[in-house]
Image 1 (cartoon, rainbow, N blue to C red):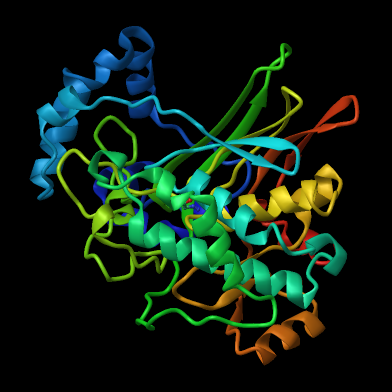
Image 2 (cartoon, rainbow, N blue to C red):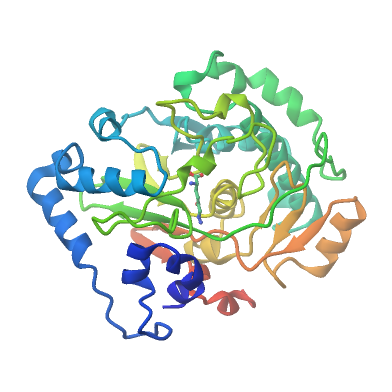
Length: 392
Ligand code: DON
């Protein structure tokens, strides 16, 4: 209810979305209200009966294309007919005696995790301690450096003309890691104006079955309620085009400034930060997790990994512990209000590191092996329970 009420104005501008989510005759949504979506029901039934054919041709496709075109959009029937899902390999990352199975481009998740874990390897994070100024600063330096590479080089592998191995080359990673220090703030190459951050709508879920099988899924409409435009079939259209560098060199809604490898080209997929992971120890699944949050997905997943496997926190603390985020640009280190100790904040600000508090970072849904049991943890952050975490 809160989420719909917050999005009320934006959802009101599209007639179909408004009829479902923001009908004029009703006041604000409250808990217990019933929301019915009959058009979506018909669409889901068509998918249940026809499978993907329901999205190749027929009424769903025709009505979506007609609505797109009458709204000035460029969707065509051929887009539905030609679209193919691509099954990609995972990127296995060896770290700390574990194997982390992470996503390959066009997700930046695997490359980001591989790089940051390599940059951090020579620093005794555990000895310094969780949220010690050195730990926070080196993490920010490492993630900013990995974002720099991400934004410069990554995109749909269909468009890349270099060897991925170069980006993960141990000697390149080691050279870069020696340029990063826990006592130093490295500003971005140049500063650019950055648009305000918008909160957004992405979902992660983690599944384990009784036989040890694991599924880690992050799925996205990109922005909150996607494009805030609903197809006649009752489903929201995404605004994934913003994950491309629509104008290389100009920030997108997440403040990411990306390059020509991620430019808009027909048939290409945009670069993503979605980073579902499965952690394997001795051939057995040990954890399944991921998060929404645009670029903060990457730093969230990294911190959950470090919490669990470097600081050896409990499953609960690994998810609930305070988080922070730094990307290349803007260079600000964002932290959850009241959840990064004052002395740490003062110390990193003293290095010249700009900082800012934000409501919360990420929303992790995780499963961890915990002795002989499984622990499933749902992050309270986006359920509006931020305050519950203040003292954790
Ligand atoms: O794929 C991506 O990186 C973005 N579409 C994710 C957006 C997102 O997580 C917004 N969520 N809160």
